[in-house]
Structures are given as C-alpha cells and as structure tokens.
Length: 215
Image (cartoon, rainbow, N blue to C red):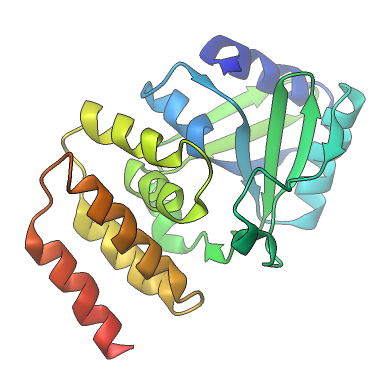
C-alpha cells in the first residue's frame, strides 16, 4: 500500500529521473488521495496522451527498479480482451497502472480536461505535471473498470462528499457510449447498487433509459 506522503515523494523521485517534461492525468485511488478521500492506495493510476510521454515515464521508473508485470487477475476478463489495456509495473508492494490515450475505450476528452480538479507539479531534473480528474469522472471510471474495491471507493466518495453532480456523470457516460456501448450499462448497474445505500432520484435512471432508447 502507498500512503499520501509516499505517493508525493515517489512522484518527486520519478521527476528526478525523467529525460523530458511530461504531463499525465491521475485517476482512481491516486486522484482520490489528492482530494483527501482516502489515505492509501494499492496502485497508482495514470493516463498519458502520447507514446513518447508514457515511454519517458516508464524509462524513469525502470531505473528505480520497477518491472513490468501481467495485469491478468487484476482486471475483469472482459476488460482484458480490449486493446486499450494498461501496462502494469511493480516494485515490492508498489504498483503503477499506466494507460495510453484512453481507459478501456474511455476517452479523456476536452470536457473532462476542463473539469480537472487541480494540477500538481513535481520538478526534478525535468517536470512531471499531474492533472487530477474531477470527482464525477473518478466515479464514472470506477463504475466501468470493475476492479476489486472500485465500488467501495465510490461509496467512500459519496459518503464524504454530498455534492456529486450525477447529471455530469450520466452525460459523460452517454458521450462515451458512442465508442463503447457497455459504459452506460455498467454505470446503470453501479447506480442500482448505490441506490441501496444512498438516495438517487428516479429521474437519473430515466435519463439513462431515454439515452439507451435513442442509440
């Protein structure tokens, strides 16, 4: 497990091994820690938009002793069949899940970029810029990735933050559905589970069903 202090120190260390400035997006538990929703995470989730940037990052962490591992058993089998799988690197109990361009077909579009919560800069030999996704986009991604404890993480967010814009989440899922039809279905299933523990207005589900009928 990696705690908040460990995560920031690790990013600072990686920046000292970079050969060029790079920019990436934090999602999952990594992003949740920047918000303060949780204090530890099993893995650091990052998305890069260019092959050059992800390769620069990989070269740096390899110098720190991280080695590539198989993601089998980490993600659901149905996700492993997709081309846009992450590359996983581990060192002891520490783990990086690195995505390129999209997360299992979920694209980081301009709306998502504009909604980013904050930007963290780590300056060593070069600069590592990490942009933190919005809480709504974190929830949506956790609703569709299907890893162990993703649902628990969503629970953690909604228990600590009552100001969640579900319309933003559904609207983004509708946009993303154009590329991967199961995204809206997975969100609906997650929301049905959440309805057992929190209030979600029926109009939200009607919005999902209406969108499905139009597709």
